[in-house]
Length: 409
Image 1 (tube, helix red, strand yellow):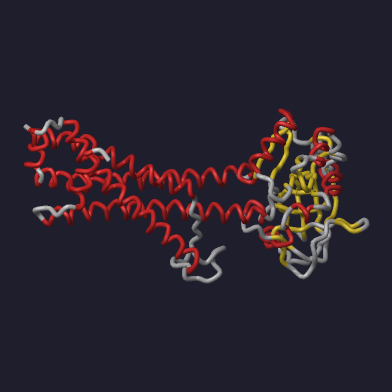
Image 2 (spheres, rainbow, N blue to C red):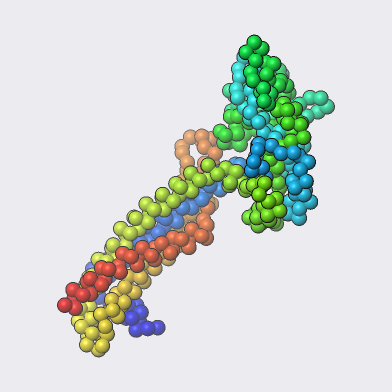
């Protein structure tokens, strides 16, 4: 242990001639701890909401989605795509075709997204976990085609989970102009029966505009026989998503792009990341203000130890070494506050996870979850620790140099 650190540690724990110095030092530690705790809790709440939204999309979005970079569709028999079925990381391969259409039901109409999927969709995702109604998930039976409607879309069309009259689906014929004399001749028309269930993702993007049906229905409706707009992939158990994504992207080449769940919902998660970043910046500024308490503590300590400073200088200590002593004193205070704040923040997050200390609101059932979700990430803990130490260093570096020079003059 060098002597600067030794003296700084002794100054921190030694009894001062003025009791107020100990009190101010304690307040400095507490101020840094509270700011640190606030950063941990706030970032963990943002993580909790991000994980919650990701869980909501899990039942609908695949682990990885492969789409063509150029053009809206590609042949379902493309040899590059078909190789994915035999990949050592892919468990389920599900071709998908999506397109815009008009649904008409008893005088009501709505522009919707038709999502045609292969029959193995139940192996691909947990879609059965988001179904509501007395029926069962079914895409087709013999010549009948079924459509599973988003719950909010069903409400807009005045439908229940089961509807007797089939949905009338219209899609414009590719490459044709609308015939003013007979507009319906410019549209493909088909019907969807009710399987007796609706789905609810709890996200308006899907619940208000999506209808899930069979792949063959979508291909026939959009005149896209033998073509798909994307391929949904479920990975084998234990396979790392990031590594698998890179491996498959290399295998597919530049014609395709491979997206994970976060990239498939990039707009949603980008907004959440921006909000988290802004909160982090504001809390860092509050932390900087809290660190100014350390300057007050150090200035009083320097005045109290004026004779010691003169003695150290007489013994050969340079001004830089004396500055180092008091800077180390400030670093120890900020480190103590940081560690205390990290512990308190982690404990508060654990209490929230286990007991739901803070609820979302008084109205039961008004929110997706009753209590604020929290998720503590190790990366955030390390980020907060580095931030506290960096802000503490910036807050005391020049003031200590200035105060020491004044005392030594």
